[in-house]
Length: 248
Image (cartoon, rainbow, N blue to C red; front, side, top):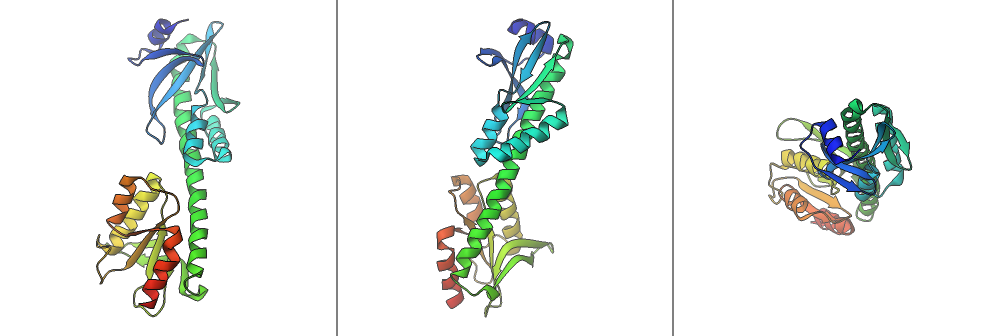
């Protein structure tokens, strides 16, 4: 079996490359990083073995640095697509060459699903951790009774949004605080919430004071987006910023 044979079976216009993990095929599936999913094909008798080469786990760890999340994502995907897992690699073994394309599609979709699930798990853990850290910083600035967790606020659209915290007190309007991480879902959520609450005027005196808090560096693009609708505040500066606003 060689690349010409593989490409004939798949009837694809994609590229095929010989690697130490097998014949590498680029698919149309995408990881959370938007990189294309690659599958690796190794002949076995009259059939073949198709794997993701361990790429799903590598992508998950690169995004979330969480082996447990990567394993959970792999298990979820393997069950969904009836694949095996061998040392962190998704594997499909087929005896009939005519089933090759189905095997490639199953492995590619499973690998994309595993990485996405793992990144979501890692992101959720990171957001919970950030909320705990923000709460600790707020306690340095104001008493517990002035901190409302899971605060609901109605935006200009009429929709009621939930932010991580609100600092209440003598002011007629609370300080609204939401943690953000450098993940598309987190940035998108923060932007939508603060945009509707403040109408895209974060520095206007007649609008809510809105803190988008981060503890790990955001990309330039993510930072620019959040600054359009909120004050972008590093975790270490939260208590100073809150104290300044409360006292003035």
